[in-house]
Length: 79
Image (cartoon, rainbow, N blue to C red; front, side):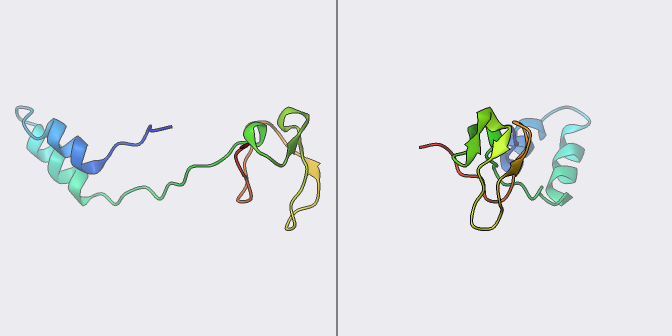
């Protein structure tokens, strides 16, 4: 799931590219980072039933129909 690029690694990789490298490095340094958090998809969640098609519910959410590629803030990886 490491699909996100570290700013420092990107800047190091592009800074020496002729003509555009320094501009890309300056631009990357000025853009705010994405606010990302790893999620657990319903199909891999401990609360999931029927291969992710039904959420078994938590104390905050009653059982309900879902989709395997959905996710929520209560997701918990199988252990």
